Image (cartoon, rainbow, N blue to C red; front, side, top):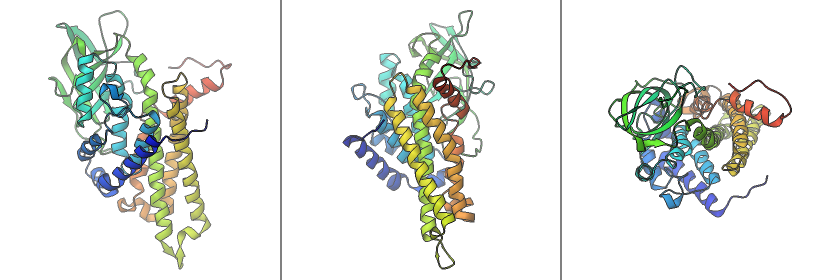
Length: 384
């Protein structure tokens, strides 16, 4: 399907590109990565541009940008700082999408806080179950007219500095599991954070383990009906997957820029190495795949809200996953030994791309969805 960017979408792309290059910058992003430091200054500045409420309609206090503009913003930011892109992807593409379905008081309070730069983190994954989010060890037991939440969540992006959590827990009270979403202030009694663990990629994204010990929340903090948590997650997850695809495409684009600059400036045997076919072919391949990733991501963004959104989001995320790692590796190859150095500008994109591939389900889970759609007459085993 051909698409054309609107004037507003072109403007947002331009504004975020300028923001990423002038206010964030490669040097700051590299320093935050080196010291595992959450990009607090970036989040505060992003709020001033409306980037912390991109998926919230204007009538509800948000920026109300299109899904395409949202993807473009994440892409432009990831070209410089994939960590900040990942934070805003989860914050806008999942956590705030859930908050929009909370009660009026909770929604108004959290959206206002998000507009001021406070981050909302989603606590869904558990160590024992991984991608099997239905197998919940975290429970929400009816208590004092509300719920008492107890459990442990891992790999929570932005948990280190988030002021607000959306927690997926089993609302006990019946004979069968009832996965349910809850809004929980990060300052609530009974919440503690795990230690900062050095990671391969997304080192500055504030990823932490979160422990919840008898955290009391009022009934009005429940999001949706009891047992509706997985349905809400399934409905909103395509937004995160499109954002993750945009961030991966941004990693490829950022690594491409560093590799192309190196191919132009590095002189070997009296001429730029870009004149040699072995190098120029690599640069061309990166350019093609970077544009292909972005094009498929924007196509998927255009389908958000439609019935086929999960399929298109899976296509975009699967393709971006499968291109990001070989293309960032290509950038390192072009730079040679410099590519392995922090000053080279590509090793950080290569590491972050490996971490981003797990944002919004694994490639294998997305390919499972795609095969069922494109082979409707084949009987596959039930999805786990």
